Length: 256
Image (cartoon, rainbow, N blue to C red; front, top):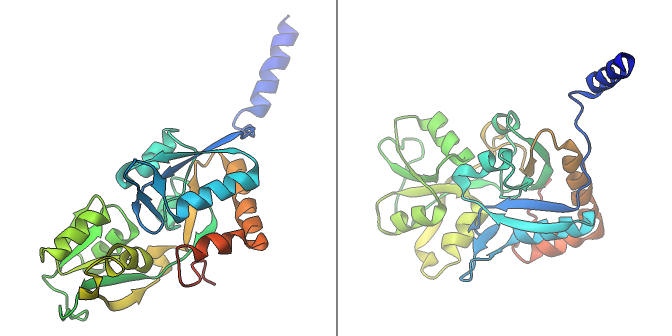
């Protein structure tokens, strides 16, 4: 009996710390639902957009059942780590800071980042001292403004971009910083959008904006990361990715 217990203990020791591959039958995706055209929330509470279509296509490619889980941005990584869902597909930039907490697939999209303001705002990007700039809280855009301008500008942080757009329309802030596609969809392409324009530089520095947008996965689920990477590549090879992207973007959203 003692020999058997010793053998069992040795076997347990040999396999400890080794993550067992999971037989994925269902993959749950956390999606914000407030960042068009990547995602938005319909009147019935369902979520639609590029990220949703991509999630469903990836699940089909991996031959697993897909479940979409709505999640506010502020808690999106903590909820992944708490196992509320298995992966995040929410226009999330791949950054070194985030890679300390989660694993990432390779990019599935890449978009430049811009400021948007009312036409005639006449912002001087060589000297923004005192300007009120809106941004979504806890994003790469938030970090860029904090690191680049510090206390020279008044950074106004919001839970969602919709809140920022309202304050921009009401004149409470001078500009909003976000990815160009979301700003175009959320402001310029909406009724009254002719009153707004992109201003200032186009921002793509990997120091803040990473290496494109990736799907975030828990570090211990590297088998899922590999499955998702293979599925992204396969969808691109088959042209499925391009068909989905063409529904939402008038340019190559994948980039170089």
